[in-house]
Amino acid sequence: MSVGIEKQENIVWDDLKQLHTEAEWKCGVYEADKYIETIFAIADETPGFYQYLFLDKEFHCLVKVLEGFKPQSAVNIFLLASHFNNLLKDGVVEIDVNSSSVFYRVKKDVLVPLLYSGEIYNQLTSHYNTSKDIYWAFQKLAADNEEPALIIADLMKKRDQQVKQEE
Image (cartoon, rainbow, N blue to C red):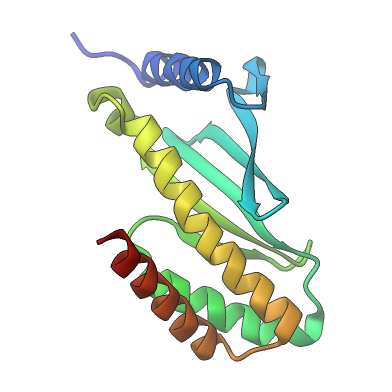
């Protein structure tokens, strides 16, 4: 007997709500839409609004990493997004030109968190950790107008230093 997609989503939805409840994360739960918005610090003293939802048989993690970029920055915004999209194992950096915003999204088939215990937490954690680096990079571009390739190089150095400190 197989479990239909709606039942799969409901099971994963219940697990997602339980995770948020047990962790006591500050969030809004929108039951009818199977949507949760959680606030985590994306940078020091800066809240990020993380969205978790189900679309097209997939579980999505989404966060805005830049809002209201200037039209003259668009080329560098697209270049930096392209650099990230070439480097990322999971997820994609998306640009919404209508709102002049940049998002980081990770999506997985609903079956993955259904089959593997702890996968929801792992996906949320991975999305969160990666989003902080992407946010840092886009804020650096917006604030300092630094070249995208230099931002990626700085980020790689920063990550290498973090790894060395953890060893």
